Length: 106
Image (cartoon, rainbow, N blue to C red; front, side, top):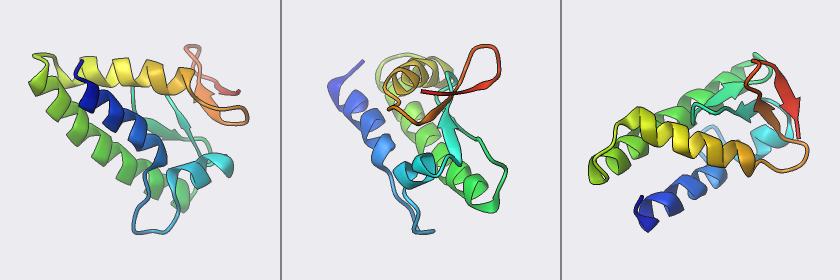
C-alpha cells in the first residue's frame, strides 16, 4: 500500500469535525471504539457517539476507496487492513471490538 495512504489512515486517529468533539475525545470518553472492519462503532449508544461514528466512518470510507483504486484493491480489503492496524494501535484505556463481538478495554 502506498505510503501516503497509510499516513492518511493514521491521521484518521486524530480527526476532528464540526460537532467540536475529536475522535480522541470520543475515545477517551469511552463513546466509540475501533473494530477490525476498519470502521468505528459506538460503545455507548448516545447522540454524540452516533455523530462521531457517522462522520468519521464517512471520511474513512471515502479515503479507503481512494486507496483501493490506487492499489488495485477493493474498499473492503483496504478497510480490513486499516481496521487491524487501528485495533492494534489503540492505546491503553480505549475500546476495541473483539473477534467475539464483545468490547474490550485495552
